[in-house]
Image (cartoon, rainbow, N blue to C red; front, side, top):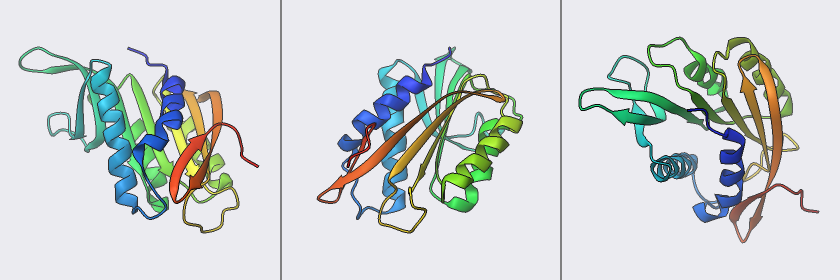
Length: 189
């Protein structure tokens, strides 16, 4: 089943404040909270979510997967594969995990990555356009607008791909109020 991944992105942005993440949380807290959000969302939509799923131990672990059905012996319909990465140096590895050849091909993929700057986003989109074999892929890049080191990322860029073609893009912004991070679609003055 093809999901409206940009609608999922909209919900991720609008609900980010409910994560209660602050500038004081470590990277692991961000990763676990965001994976848990998408896991709960999958359950609410009627799918069967699994974290660190290896598809029967035949492939690299997926940070999160949503499966459609279980016949008592096998899982069927890999609806979603989500990868979440904090480390800059693992950005291309994350794309490889999402787009590699494998036995179970997901209908939808989402990659959420921290990247150093806008130039790196452009480079990664070119890599994705060359390697993506999925008709419904959402890449979410979190970065700082200045490219300088600061306590939190302040821009979020989303790219919806259909194999080698970028179909849609969106941009959101991050603010902090008393240390708690909020995402929104309008740039605050």
